[in-house]
Image (cartoon, rainbow, N blue to C red):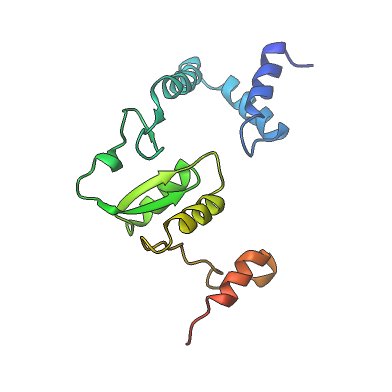
Amino acid sequence: MLSPAVDNLVAQLSRLPGVGSRTAHRLAFHLLQRPEDEALALASAITDVKERVRFCRECGNLTEDEVCAICLDARRDHSLICVVEQPVDLLSVERTSEFRGLYHVNPNMTGEATAAYLADRLRGRVRVTRLASGLPVGGDLEYADEVTLGRALTGRREM
């Protein structure tokens, strides 16, 4: 029913995480209604990021240089390393402004497996910790998974 070009756009958009067929159609029609320069600006941004962005050779974070700004920052504590599963997790930690060390991004393994491996290999030589985990204040127990609920029970403190 639609043109092959629109069908292709919908197909490509639906490959994005969290974008189903209906959302892909809505995005495609939105792009068709926008001025050409806006749609081409989006296409250019995608091309630009694919050509310029790479992984930091030190930590695996996203950067446009060989080494990311975090690794180059002499004010960071080089004795602390936070292992995260993907660059978006690094951004979440950075937004807190609480961690001032370096990172190790491991997009090929789960963060849990990497943390367990490192803790085992480094035991007795360095201090290895993990983020506290549990339930958000006011959160409903029915929506908590078993692992989170179990950790919340294990890590409970005196009131």
